[in-house]
Length: 440
Length: 151
Image 1 (cartoon, rainbow over the protein chains, first blue to last red):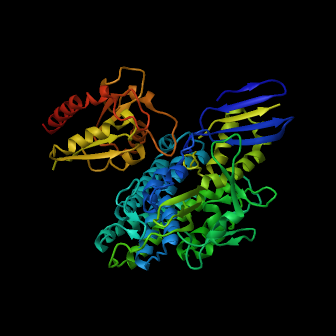
Image 2: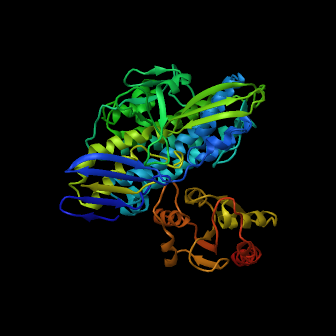
Image 3: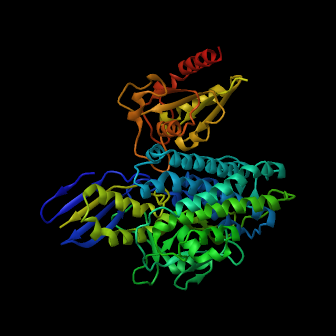
């Protein structure tokens, strides 16, 4: 951090924002104590995925887009596959659909357990890292130990269903390359049952963390499915009345260029501001009624009010989604009967397909257009972090008046905490962070 | 029964960062007995590979101002490793993972780290000739390390 000050002006620069994925920076400009502008600068170079997908076979898309993110490759696979399957007219049999949901549970578990314990909890408890947190007391060390075991349980799902723990390779347009035998999934059950109990303890612990007062009238946006907590399917709904099909997404949301960032930002079309809030808190606020009773009871036992408008409460919601994902994984495994074939046949054809799935950190939109041979003419990918960037800037603008009252280092740490509520994956948005506060 | 030795190559496909993966690939062809071989991209995955092994041997490329192709051997804990620790992101550097595992009491009884100084780490560049030339020597030292561990 590089502070500088004159009687009327002040600059705070954080060389890198710790515990957020990617490369980026943040500048807050103040004039006479008032916020003039807040800019989330993404200076990680553009990665050109959308451009180099053009001309590739649509069936290659899941394996290419999975490389966009090491934390949420399944999300990229799922959104891309669904979009291509819509073009090719593929309908998933229930067994294969269930396996995809199971795979997604694995990814939510890996991502959420990591974020809760390694990245976010140290913020609340005032430690610089999970290592420092674990060193602070035997009780905290045990919580981190428990987290590592829970994450490993999530890994095991991705490995069995996805073929390997990192960048899974087993999903394809039409289904899977290989489906697991029932015994392979049953072998996971004992550990998943332990992990579900551990997740209940995690919810209780997360709810005891100190949440700063930070409520705001956000527009929460998430998917909504008639029968299940959303992962792979559903309409796009919001806390302010939006209810659209996935195909209508481009009519209501747009990506646009901002001069200070290499990443596009997304906003609601035809709205005065356009900022909206995607991710676990939005999902829970809009879908809590669809969670299993076990999870709803755990939420009620926290004593917190839901729907909740405090982004810091996202850590509790992530822990609820961890509980949900373990419970859902056990249900899916119990019901699993291997399908007769690992994939359904399809014939490539020309068309346009849109698909949205719920990545751990929010909506992930893909759109593809193919020619008669199933080759990609165009590709559009709107990652969750692009969608949340404007909202992050708005949150930072709200705390900017407080930031200037704090010592520089504390100001930087507070800004980082606000950003981490969104678990931004800047690499996915092209996309990590230096903080600069300028007062004039 | 003796606990297995686990050899983990940390790296990426980018330039000399791939050297540890190349070592693991070469080791797989040798079918070493009671030796598990793994490749990972970062420290988070390393944390998943600590259970049930007596000795963990970590191989990683090193980006520093030294001479490319230089081999360095560390035995955990080693104060020189602390300088390798960066600010964390969604992943951890291997040394951070080892430090966390040490705090949590999850480290195997013996942890050895072989580091190879690289000269280029850009995507698409492949191993530099200097670093590629060191792989056979590292394989010999690794084999000697395993024989000594077995003794």
